Image (cartoon, rainbow, N blue to C red; front, side):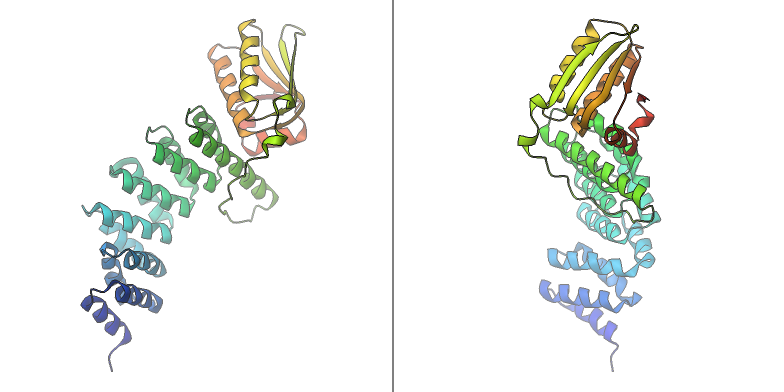
Length: 321
């Protein structure tokens, strides 16, 4: 009596019908028999999309055995096959896969569509080792690569990405700015989750939904200035958010232009700061630093302080109680 795996392999090699091949690939993957691995990998270049998708899912069931073969096959000149191999590697994950994908992203790959597939696979794996390479992608001009890198950094949830994401929020493209805002909020929520439960596994964080525009009005912010003891103090009352952050920026830049004294931002009556406003604060910090002027934040309430703590921005801003 013929061996089941041998029968399936023979059937796979003898049919051109996509629906049959897709079914056989799925069944071969379910056996877990290593003899089926190479025939399955061969179908990653099949013309039928369903066959390729089943092959990607089936390969993921073979673990390290599949990783070694797939990484060796990345040298192919067929860009479409490389994309499918990278998708399969993303399903497998692991240290070796992460390292190879990072090398592709930084050095070995030039095809944009393949690079996008690399970023998508890194999003599935969510390894902290990918954070620095993805931050490098943020500096590229390509819109889609930048957008996918932002989304992936948000899913990884590593606070190292917050400051680079704040820089991205200077981009004039509203979709890029909003993606960076969502990514920063996701990182904040992921970091809060880890602090609450350090043993919790890293998981993708759902995109933050925009707050109701009716709850964010320009009147939510109050700005006044005082000048005690040789310094300028701007007192902020209410919320700093995407709706009023540019008004806030204009006000602060106006104050900066009229004095060379150290600048302090009094946040005692500031109830909330969102990612857009954090981006503005970071720009102000950098501008004053370039002019060698002192800039500090003071008297934060616990909620606002937590925002800086969870994003690790308390390490780059001077904060006074």
